[in-house]
Length: 329
Image 1: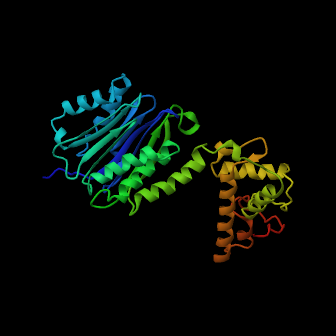
Image 2: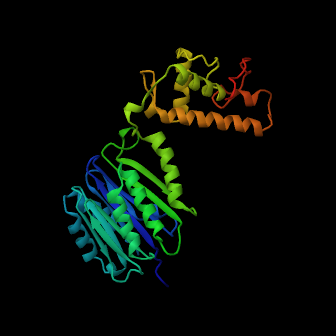
Image 3: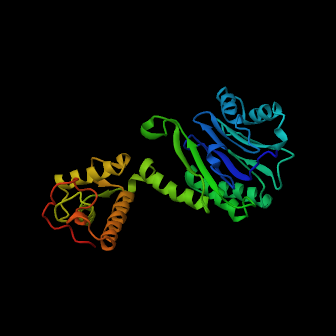
């Protein structure tokens, strides 16, 4: 019986500015995120692939937690593994030192490249240009770790990527108290398990994740809720059934209550403020959601009288308000 192997390209990296460690990966293999990426805040990150030895994950993190260097961890894991010739491994430690290993029996093309705070590796690729493009792109891309890691994946795919095609991708980034409600270190943890364009789908999911779970917007972009901004919010909240008044531009208590209800019901608690200012991302999301609701009403015949004019934010059951909904834009 032949041993299953899968072609994969990944990048493991450390962001000193934000004390974050991360892994991004793509493969012609189902649910690659369940196998390849491993990371722990203030410890390090690693990717185990080719004929992946998943024991490298917890054992490597245990070694890194003891302060051992990336190079030492790679040597220790592969040195004790009789199947190392078919393994591939990339590691960054808590200080950002990077090391990698490609076994002599990994399927062509297979190889790796390390740099300042990162390691790129891949197997069953179109050629060395895949890994080289990932490394150069990561080095040159500005921004936070999510953008840099996903840019590296895209660069590798543009050079051919896994020569059998695409199927799954994942992005894992850890930082201290980076998870939901600061209860874990999982700052970003998203996966695409099966998709014809997994990297693009990963980017789409990240945009939603970023909007909902993260707080990366520049405070200088905050908008005072007054005038046209207030009127726009009132209009869109009205379309969705959260606000029953007319768009006046006066940000009163009913307006604040409607907006707060919308924020909580749509999981944007991390974006809620008490200074009558709003993040531009929320304004855009609310406008897009209201436009989609208007489009839905034009396509859908009402099953119950007045059902479509109340919007998803209206109270369930009961009688309609009797007030006319805010006019659509």
